[in-house]
Image 1 (cartoon, one colour):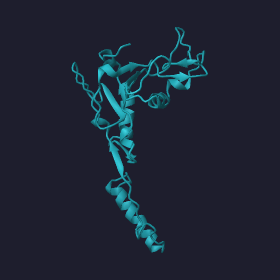
Image 2 (cartoon, one colour):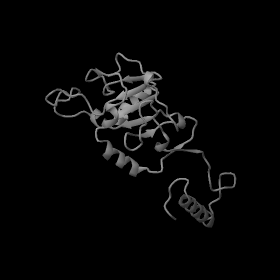
Image 3 (cartoon, helix red, strand yellow):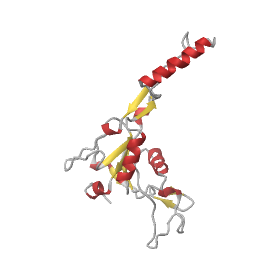
Image 4 (cartoon, one colour):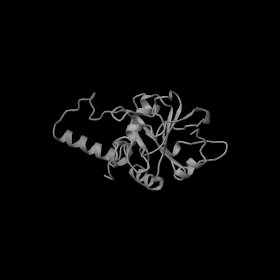
Length: 202
């Protein structure tokens, strides 16, 4: 059946096969005489997200890659705010958003967590890393909840991360089109090389 990728021919073949088996088993259709239920989907392709700057044209896969957001995102350097590591941890008493308002702004976040000169985590106060070090989703959720317009996340191992993400879903991501799916804020991973020439007010 060529696999069962959503909205692909193989899925249609599989669905028709299952429906035929239901019919042979005498299971009546319950959706207005049909075995099928239709629902709208939104295909989000990371390659369609573009970063435009007057000084440089950024290249997808080399300078950045995107995992969420609207079909096209135009970056405005006047609307960017540096939010450190993007961490809010009440237990550790750490809040990178304490003195900034990121509403409708682009948030620039560093990957990882803060450490001292000896490599101790300033969150756990020890050599043991906190969950913030590798859990990017926590940082993204915080920026989203603070109503940021977009997120730039510096990726220290950009090539490895891009290869893993591109293999996971090379055709893009399908979302249930519930009227809000296309309003997800862009999450854009930047390489360290791109960051060097990125106009960010640190």
